[in-house]
Image (cartoon, rainbow, N blue to C red; front, side):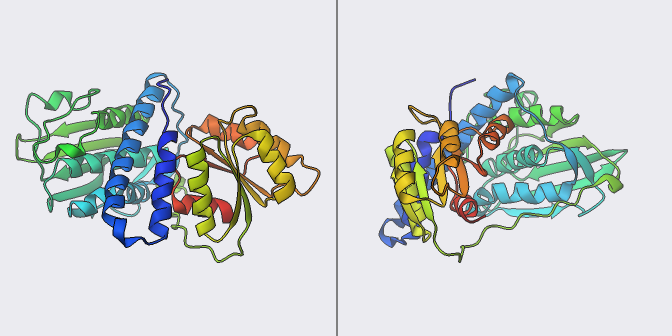
Length: 352
């Protein structure tokens, strides 16, 4: 384990969202710069954590029968900010039904999003990216093709190796750590599939082809795309925010206040219990890595308050593995958020 998390970036991300809600036009350009860099750092840390989990065998797939088109829609949503920023033309030719795979929807979406992001990074602005998929001899074949800088013959056999990158002649600021394609290869292998790369050379673009076993259409589960949360019109709630990181607590409290709720802040378990007895929160948002008394123990204590306990407990943490979510659920949490959480995630957690 690398011992990393995105927790230090959470207060920065939350503060930016608060500033955006307040519509301070004078700092819009600076906010955009900071947001891009924070997002970039979050992706780098996430990649490092994923490699650590994969290499130590701690990635657990939650597989189900799902149409490839549905997973692709999630992947496009994940990679759309970069595609839109660089004004790429994205063409998708993938049937809505008939390409059912047995896969972990979240991890497979990550695979395809990594391929799309890779294409976007190495393709000049206003370039072309296409996604096609078909059924071939009991296999689903998906190809992401771009009109970008291409891959040299000497680099082609190495593109899926750790910490390997093609020279970024167009925009080095898009560079990561050379982990994205290594993660793709590992996750695809865990699904029983394969991934290959092809390029005619420098300036000739590239193509990445993913192959996965197909399952019968009758086994396909009905998975609908989740709608993006909209602003809640419910009456404001009393929300207790507990985090030992003062900046993170204050930023999150201000964000929740901007949503129309009333907040109280505490920085450890004992003071949170005292505040709860006075404030009678309807919702408690708890960091799990608290001093003196961790968030799990605090959740149990809050549930046992002799006065009205919080009706809803929300865990906020830098760790999002299935075992972390399970432990939070066992402690009585209703929602498990991974730092840095978005406005939509926080609002959905508060009002769900």
